[in-house]
Length: 519
Image 1 (cartoon, rainbow, N blue to C red):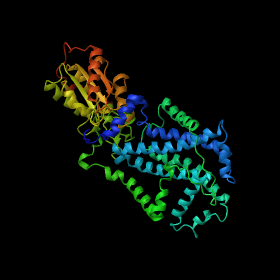
Image 2 (cartoon, rainbow, N blue to C red; image 1 turned 90 degrees about the horizontal axis):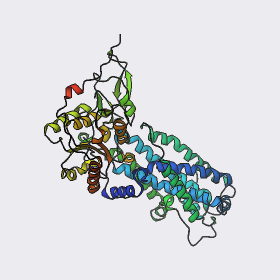
Image 3 (spheres, rainbow, N blue to C red; image 1 turned 45 degrees about the vertical axis):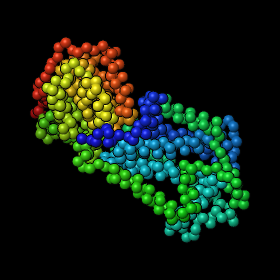
Image 4 (cartoon, rainbow, N blue to C red; image 1 turned 30 degrees about the vertical axis):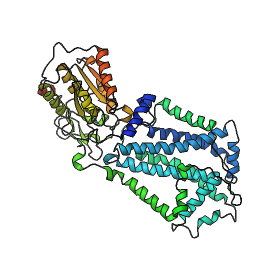
């Protein structure tokens, strides 16, 4: 089983920020949950504004062409500003996204490729930004060029030190600015290939935030550019050094270290930092005994319906041709891709797939034990994600609410819900994470589809929907969770059922759907 919510939850400071943003924006539009997709929006903004700026940029007069753009009060100034601020925001959003993935331990196992490719993406963004500032050839751009040249001179790549090109004894050639222009255009376009790797192990990757949030990010960058125009330091001139040089520390954070510690130390810092980031998946993976078990398929129960393959968020399930004559197809699971979320278990009507101990049949046995204990009839029973809502178990126990911890609400089989209702539960609550922050990506989505929209394996029409409620909760706000439960009971005016099927016949309810043998 995965680690409990108490040991595998975001640090309280980050969780408090999440709660604050949820109250301010709502969980659907919480920008902290959308940091990864916000990066994509900013990349599109940079692409559009960059193409416009490219029309007016001249390698023969870099600073003057940019100054001409900045002096245009109607369009040039704010487009350049949006491009500049968007590039800074992209670094911030990328850092927030990486920090969340790290703190949530979504870095190891099947997610290793996404993490490592994300490190590469961050490096490409920083190098692309470096070339953009150098292209302007103001004093900050020159400082970046000189610092970069000092770093490159330590590598056995050039016959003579390239830092000499910026000594001031001769003008910097147009070829230098053309190379920077080429890299500044080619690197962002090359991000597409790395980004494909980044999401290649995801089924239905979510690339963009909700439309309202995406446009809000774009408008915010434009508004900031209008209110606070992007600064343009003086043109680089080795004979006229300004008293102060406006710097962008998102891309020039390493410059002071070059002067203080030398290029060799900076290279060592870059190397250690990069190696450390790349090793995160191996350094953060839990012990073998603590890792969630991958799903398995009982081929005797599999009917080849393909629903588990459709629902798997990580494309860990494929359908292959059967050889035993029972049906045309059977599900096969790739353990290297499976994260052990158990979403497939809830998608299987005959309950023939899922992690060991967490299949639909295992859930029904757990429900049977709870029913036999007498803690269901007339009471509220809650399923809670053990990475969040399960932490409310103690608080809910005060209200005599039974909490059943699950690795993901998408793992809850609708038959388990039905049996609880039939056994006399006053209300069955399923308390999950916000859909945009699900550790397993699509758990809340598929749960809602199965309960309310007849997705296989659906909650049967015979189940009283008034006695089933799905909600997202903040595990740090038990008062709000209790208030939510009270409101649901009060609004639905639910009294204990008059009659109930106290003990469902598990063996009869779980009989697999018969399949015709091939003739």
